Image (cartoon, rainbow, N blue to C red; front, top):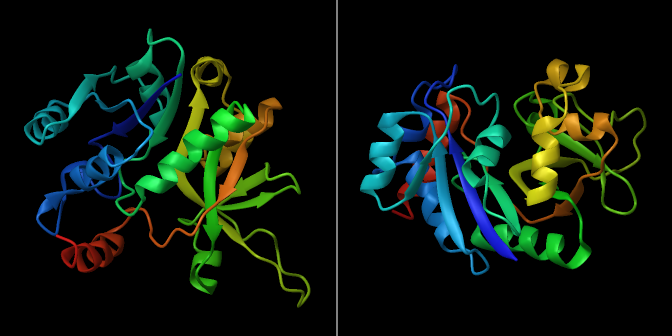
Length: 241
């Protein structure tokens, strides 16, 4: 089955306008993510999906295949769906364009789980690093059932620690895998009140009654959401540049 990585890229971020093209240690943020995707051993192709000509021109300049999508796309998932529409028999990994610390092996872990376990949708998680991440609304937490499927995702601290009992708290890592057929179903689902309340599109799947497989990983990074994140990333990536 053909395996595609799609990196949705939107210019109009409210907190960091032009985020995909912001310079980090000498490269646009989007290029850091694209180069990680290229290193996946299992992928058959990498696409950047955008509706912005500035992003298209920059991505083409560093060698990416770009698919222009509609400005009406409401989310990264909608953009990924439009980019792969008509490409049959596929597994799709939606890699968010603000995750420069994703490792290629993490992408391959998603492809492998989806192929071996025949699940419709999967994503990754890792333990929160500290109390700051646990309480930070920009860090999305996830709780799992005993079979490794998501019970809920939230910007709030979950599970709430009412006792001193030790429990591993997981944060969500911004990467998704879908079968092509489930991606079609996902974008057709109506937005629910939970998705709108938390501003987390994956809640649409849970609220509609489907399951999301969540694979723990040893992720040591963060997404770029704020100026502070940008500065932290620049310090770390300057060593690798």
